[in-house]
Length: 121
Image: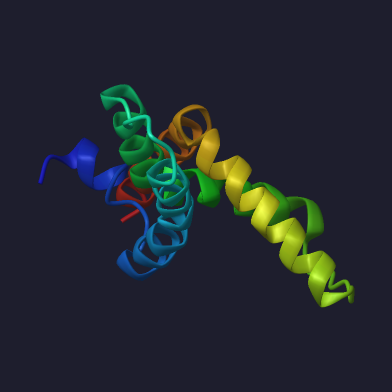
């Protein structure tokens, strides 16, 4: 595998990528289900968007979780489970919809992080 690809696209652990990818499949599945209830066909452009957003979602979620981890640190909040799940669903949706814009920041970070790790060996 090319070093740039290994440091960026291969920068997340496989288990993390698969877990986030599976969560990312929720939104295109919901969209396609709702679209199937209408008479209009899904456009090629929309299908491309669904695929790209789903593939980039794990990187987008990585950026979001990194920022939240930096802000929150080791603090723990106890809140209502329903509120937490709704908040999590909304943040997942935002990360999925905006993945094409957010994920490049994660890919750049992973490239420099893994380059630095390689240079420190």
